Length: 110
Image (cartoon, rainbow, N blue to C red; front, side, top):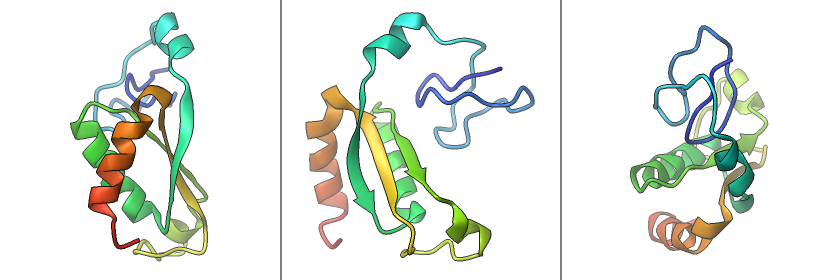
């Protein structure tokens, strides 16, 4: 199974590119990469839309991230700026302070 070298997700064989990061998947991850990255809960956001906006900004800075949340809002066709379902974004612990600054600049209104 292929893996995303950024977010470390495992995908089905027919998937060639990470839908979150947009990078080409690899056949296996380096063992030390998995062992050395400790992801921590970074921020809760009002919807997946905001989470994906922040994830894209982090990706451009070379910071991997993981979005966690129930995608029921997408299934029901309400992919908008608010959701009744909590969406969180997780980042490597060593990047947390840098991520906080970026998120504060982007989302000072929420």
